[in-house]
Image 1 (spheres, rainbow, N blue to C red):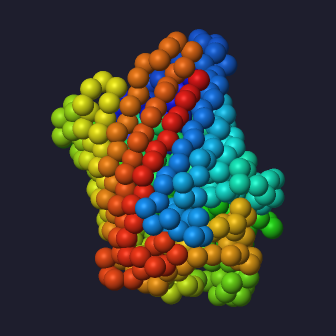
Image 2: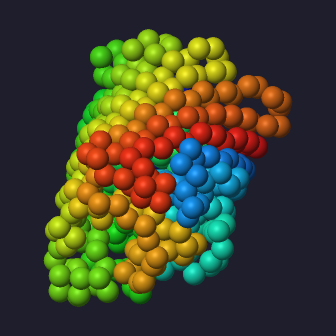
Image 3: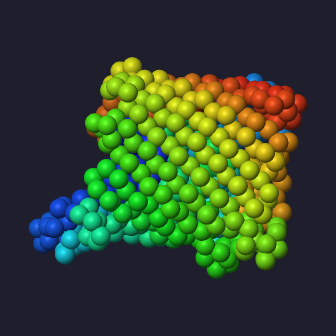
Length: 418
């Protein structure tokens, strides 16, 4: 089985762009000069199976049973089957003439699928707490064009390249997600994403898609495309520094909410810059700054997140995360208590929600990640106990049935991969 993180702890801090490339699509031009006859193209197909479950208790004991501001461990104190992920990966291999071809498939079952749903594809498969969605289904290509390192592409369904925290629990530090990852980073796309490798350090990124968690036709909330442009740097300053900047632009609001004319013309602008510094073999530091402006909703957010990690032993890593997140209108940080609430909201359909006034959120999280070597057939066993402190920094009361300025979440998750 191939996992999406190449090492630990550094891998838990890489951005989603690095996650997208790691082991999937990036291939050097000299590697694809081999002909298909020199190797069996099907010999390196990997099939993986991963299970994650957990729970987060809430010091505020909310009567509505919700951990406000948490889309994934959303139920207070309730054990959750977060995901069962079945993955098939055919890495990019030569097919002749300097070209490469690969295939990536991943099907997800569990409560995480309620938030990572793709309208028009998986939004009507199940309506239970545990749902099914294809998080990855794409053709990966390498083309020997433009530069020596060439051009890579993924065409089909792919996770958003924006942000640091990803859906895969083995490729992020914490069980809970930052407000930034949930409300200011997109989740899934249907379209095409390209990486033009300018040299061994720098890559230009661009792509077009149907929108955040949208497909085409009736599965689109406004019928308009969106897209990315940006660049990244890796292995800088002797391999210690990497960064990614992405700008995303396109209409994201639903016709049913704004009307067709306004929904087609109102743009959402997303800006995200993140960087990782490997201070030493044991210490890592990552920072992310994100800003979102939505013309249709007249809404703005900005946020800053910092992660730090210390590899205490070869199997134990200690992490800390701090964040400040501003929701200027109270329209972005939303809780969806019903199983199909998030999917309905994407399309502008009626959905029961919990929202807070305009709030500046602060959160501080601590955890440990334990990855013992437990046997030949179990490729990964991961335990992550976590404690998280949330507080409204501007005096509002968004927590515990909108009665408290702060709360504490405590719990964690267990992940097993084969």
